[in-house]
Image (tube, rainbow, N blue to C red):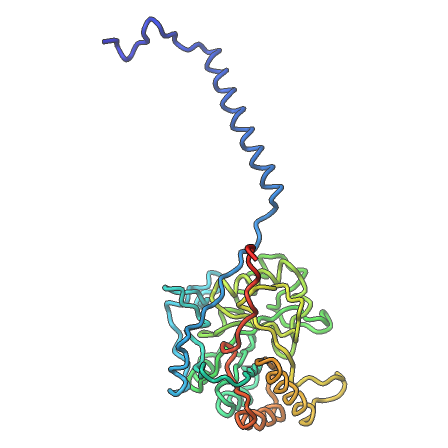
Length: 352
């Protein structure tokens, strides 16, 4: 048997020249492969935002409709620490694809075939008296969007009151409004001119403010964040992040058909702002609010569903909403939480 440590007579030991030639061929192949891969990546372009799967609400939600109108306590399995904000948590999708939008959804009678209308009051949390008025005196089917700038000392009180009275909660995300910089949304607003990392931190700061929310919205303290929502990449990041965390997103830009999210089934779009005056110089009156609420109701009757938006809460607005809401059922329209309004239809498949 030949000595394995020594080449046989038919084999020639490698010389320095053949070794270098082999290494040269090896690196030539590697460089060619890397160059080809880089060219392919350049042709494909940067990776896009993956479409989040739609939040699938269970069909048997109606079973809880006759029970107490309460929202469950915040579930620690649906949270993770906010890395940049110690002591704060961010919503996440839990085991079994259980999303916060499902876990904290209010009950409603899914077998009710009447037209559905949802109403969200934004800017809640800044005025303590008006906030408690909303949570205690308005029907539980009305959702509330909490200001990101609400006092930290009131967060637990308002969160507990909202859960106890059955109001679904959304977290407002301050975004650059159309009138910026003459009008602005505070130190933590998402800006078109800010770098992506700063906007990411401000978005996470907003989403960590209030526990047990079903979603988020750009409606914040009477503003709509229109200018930021018109940007492609920045607004896409907001929609991607909220969907990834199992939240619905309510776009306050009323009736926005050119939503940058066509096909995103986790987005809902407001149809009407019920407490906005057509003339900025003219204060909103009770008659104006009544007319807008009647128009919202007609829209729901015509289409089968409609979403209204109001806020920040003021006495005359809350009074007119209460009167309107208490008479809805007699007029054949059902007031429902936002989670009971279906999303847009899925985009057509490539097979069609």
